[in-house]
Image 1 (cartoon, rainbow, N blue to C red):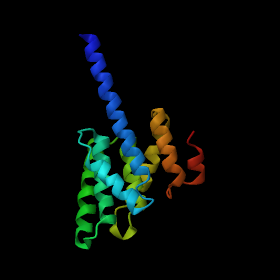
Image 2: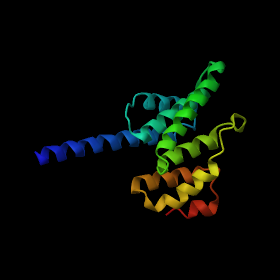
Image 3: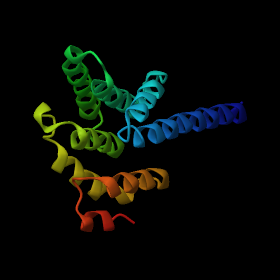
Length: 161
């Protein structure tokens, strides 16, 4: 019985992490083009989970939808709803580095006129101070993000090993 339960748990975590990898890969390409953004939105829409990180990516997809929508009057509602969802999941999971990374990347890339950029310094500090505590896959992901980040300095980027 314990063996079956262990196998089931292992399979669950395997598929959960592969879902996360698919989301991470799609998200890292989302800002490069409208096609990348649309692909990420589609990937995120197809995920259903109560995992806070997946909820965070879904919120980021909703915000990104404002960039690719042709209906200009819906842009504000996409940003407002997505930002509200992202803030809610971060409030419930304040020590989750990946959620902070998602918010930081959204706030870096959203037009300043939207006014959603108040957490950049806070998130950067939190990510840098908790970087060493993360698993290897997340460290690689954080470092990849940091290398293209507009908020992190060259010194801060070099501190990520």
